[in-house]
Image (cartoon, rainbow, N blue to C red; front, side):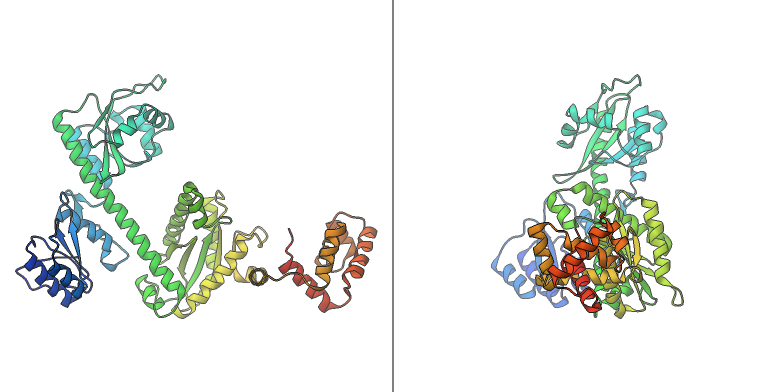
Length: 511
């Protein structure tokens, strides 16, 4: 992002977005477009209205430089700050030295204290769901409900319900003016200080609100200060959201590129700081619906919980090693864990993954797959494929209640799952003796398939197999003879037994 200076020769990086401050005349705009086209600029922002003319349209088409209009009421300073946040200068990290409204960008606690000083009252900054994002000092001067709000970082349900039922939240969010709340009928024998609140808007979107515990309505001067504070807070909240969204999206793109392998993997690993050492791939997932299915079914709460779990996973890995990288890619949270060249990376990753799941509990029944260690970018795609194979087994419940596993733990199960998927894709159906037994069972309910499966699983031990299906051994022996007769199967032939076992596990999985 570059601000245009008509008195200096432009020095532009590739794909620059140029702010044409003070550029108004059509001829000047056309000349500037042609100059920007020589430098490969991406776009030119002009103050609205931009006069539409054939010359301007032709210059835009020839140079490939997009022309955008900055609407009335938006300042160049605000636009520049917002663009810097969104573009992020091509880096994953963000500078914390910027200021908005004279305060460190994104420091909501500093802003809460500044507003408290202006209003001479303790202040909280809350999001749309009345969760506390920041609070000022002097909260001991407020009432018990404010203390509960600050300690729980959430407005208590009793008060949020009263605010909604009395239409206070609706009135608050529909206006830019401060709303005075004199009292709430809580039914509790506790004092309730009046509140004054103002919504924080970004255009038509409500970002949150500012709440001050006061003794009386605000003076006109303080009400004006609160309105202005809400505008400044909007910039801070947009800065935080833009920075968080851009950083997450960029990190996700880099990690996804690295996991795919190919020519871009080395550059992506380099930007993530992981180019010079082996890494182990971890894959965090949850059994059940995918993220896309959750979105389509409207289960926003579960999708939000999954996003939080992914963020917690990234934080946990970051605490283990500062160079760890983690991000949600589709419905899987992948992590890249740097490991020593002479160490056992997979076992270290298993311990770290187990520790994470123990910390977060089993509310979402998450599982973590540990892939092979990749010594360089070229091996990362194979390592990711290994992690995906393990995750598929864990999600399908085929790992005997394991929540963390590496490929060595579930290699056979992963092979069976792959063959099962291949058979389903090709539409394979049972054939030979197994098909005949299934058809016979459908007509006579003879349970011959159940008998064959139990006998194969018990390695031919009739006593153990009969116990598994809860029948007398003699009854089981009779059924086994019927299996051989009806299916035309030679149970003494090892190849025949192996073929039947494969069909039962892959084409006719146990219900």
